[in-house]
Structures are given as C-alpha cells and as structure tokens.
Image 1 (cartoon, rainbow, N blue to C red):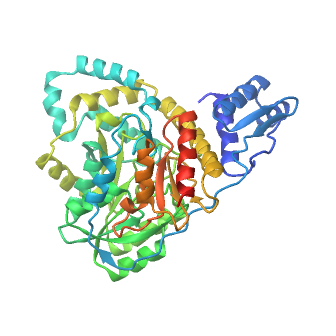
Image 2: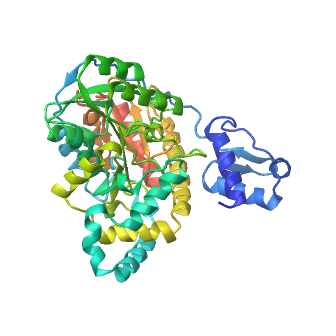
Amino acid sequence: MKRYEKLADDIAELIRTGVIAPGEKIPSVRHASSTYGVSPSTVFQAYYLLEDRGLIQARPRSGYFVHSLARRQLSEPNISPYASSSVDVDVSELVFSVLGSLKDPEMVAFGSAFPSPDLFPLARLSRSLASSVRDMKPHSVIADMTAGNPDLRRQIALRYMVSGMLLPMDELVITNGAMEALNLCLQSVTQPGDLVAIESPAFYATLQVLEQLKLKVVEIPVHPREGIDLESLADSLQRFPIKACWFMSSLQNPLGASMSDAKKKQLYALLQQHQVPMIEDDVYAELYFSAKPPKPVKSFDTDGLVMHCGSFSKCLAPGYRVGWVAAGRFAEQVSRLKLMTTISPSVPAQAALADYLQHGGYDRHLRRLRHALESQQRAMLASAARHFPHETRVSRPNGGYFLWFEFPERVDSLQLFQHALAQGISLAPGPIFSANRQYRNCARLNYGTPWDERCEQAMATLGRLLAAF
C-alpha cells in the first residue's frame, strides 16, 4: 500500500468511527503533513482519494470537510426477541417465489445476493484462466480433483497465515462455492431430525439447506451491531440437545453485525464447554471497511471444533463457484462426503484463481472493492434518510454490501416487494430470513451496485410506496 493510501485509510477510519463527525473540518494539508510526517503532495493525494470515495468534500478557501450524509440519521434496528423453542423449517416456497422474481436484468437490483459484476476484475481473471489452462499438465486434471488444486490451497493457507492462523493444508477442502462447504459441514455432524442453532434473522439459503436436510432449528437473536446474543445461546445450549451451530460472526447476512474479539472468545468458550461444533460462514471476510480485518472465531479454536467456510464468490469471481472449508477435526468426514457427491469444483477455475491470487494483484483489487462499497453504503444511507419514513430504522455494518431496514409496524414487506417489482425494483423482504416468518416489516437492500441517478430514483420510489402504507 502506498503512503497516501495508508493515510487515506487512517483518516477514513476516524470518519467511520465518528472521531471526525459529518460536516466537521479535517486537518489542513500543512497540519496533516506535519502531524503524519509526509509531504504535502502525499496529503493532497490522500485527500483526493477520500474525495473520490465520497468521504470528504473541498470548500473554496475553507479546506476539506467530512461529507454531510443527510440532515437526519436513521436509528438502529431493534434486536429480535428470543423464541426459546425449536421449530421445523418451511421457507423454500416463499424464498423461491421471491427469488424467481429477481431475474430481470432491467431491475434495480436491491434484492440481489451479489455485488455488481462491474466491481470485479473479470478481464484479468480471464487472462489467468487462459494462462493456467494453457500451462496445465494433463495429469493434474485428474490428480487435482480430489484434494483440490495444490497452488490454490497453498494461496488460501498463506492468507490464513497472514491473518495469524497456521493451518495445515490437509485441513483445507476445496468445494463448489461456500454453500457446498456449509452443506457438507452440516451433514458431517448432524442427522435428520437433529437440532441446529442459527441466527435470527438468518440468510435464507441457510434455512433452505436446513429444510432440505430435515433439521430443526432454534433461532438465536442477533444484535444489529454486536452480533449473536450469547446469553440466549447459553440458555439454548443448556436446554436443548443442539448438535451444531451455524453462525456468521462477522458481517452477518442480513444484518451486517460483527462480534467483537472478546465476544468471539466467549462464543468459542461456550462451544468448547458443551463440545458443540460450529460452522462459521465467513464469505464476506474480505469486505471489511475498518483498517484491520476482523478475526474469525476459527482463530480462537484450539480443539478443532470450528469449521471455517469461505468463498471467492462475493469478493472476486461469483461465476467460478469455488469455495473452501478449514474443517478442523471434521476434515476427513467433509472430504469423504464431497467425494460421494460432487467430487470436485472446476479444475480450470481453481487453477485460474490460484494464478490470480499469486500474480493478479488480489489485495489491490480488494482495497478498490472495499472503498467502492463503503462509498455506496454511504450513498444508500443518505438516500434512505431523505426518502424513507422518519420511523425507519437501519443497520450500519462495517463492511459487506447489505443494509437491513426495519420499517414502521404498518408496513408489510411482502406487499412492498410486490409493489416495488411493478416499478422495476427488487428487494429481499424480511420473512424469508426467518424460520418463524418474522420480520414482516423489514427488508434487506443491496448497495453493491455503483450508485447513480437510477438508484437514487429507485429509493425515492420506495419511499413513496412506504408512505402509502
């Protein structure tokens, strides 16, 4: 990272954490140059970058100021109540009816589960694919099918090492995206009829997998900022024969909540006390906005209890369908289950990703992606504050590309979904994120598309639809 990029990131962190408030003046170029020990030209470059990211704005003869998002700020959503009971899962029909309506490419894709493909280095990936296929040895096409491409596994292991985790390569299982990894992990530790602890609200695909495997769930409330309610989890682990936990400890979908390191340690202590394995869904791990990446619960795992699942689909190559799991003590079971089902993800796709991670500038791409998403989040928050009812509540995640909106009680998000579709706008209504069909007045919106006038007009349209309830 260049010096001006580091300086820009340091100032962005002060803005993000509220140390420098919206509308407040940031240090002058001369003062910043003296304080940080860099040249004025470096400060100017940093300030230009912050302007490009939409974080600051220049005022003639006055200096630089933190961009004022809106005249008012929306409040944080309420935490969901603790149900303290187990339930069967039956959401697939509702989910399919919603997702089937999101395929129109002309839609404003607030309901999408992916960022815009315009944010990914697809041309550079294509060159990696062509190069890796051209250089691929015939034997490797067969040999790499079981364990996975060794270069890709090595690159993934190196990224774990850089983040402070030394994992043996034989713990890594390459899968067809994160969903297969998560599915295989569940199958390795549960049987039909078993009870699994999940978050509430939870990603709808989580519910679909559990329904398919005929598993029951107990829903653990998630605070929109602090993550899983550990008191509720402790109570459930004490009262129910829970066989596994499936959680997102950082940038949880749909709320965007991230647990602190201290809470992650407490979570792992609970799991270890009850010897309950955890499936850690960490597909948004690279999309943080803060200066340092969040630690996964896996980093505190001393007993092989945590199966840490990742993917390149959300941050680099959605169509390549390559994920992985660091499966701890369950690596052999997971690997055998994979061989009994899909055998292997695409060998050329694995080779292409290995080449890109080694030569393509992955970290540079991730910095650009994070900056774009942070700017787009600010734009959606500002737009919501302008157009949505004043009682609306919204999450403020420190990464990812989703916002969770809690609308006034009178709003029915399934009706809102239908009315919005008629206007060419998609969204993800709250009830698809709960086994109990909760969150009737909530919705998840995706800010992963570069913000433009079309997005702004769509938010204004949603505001008018909300006002009609």
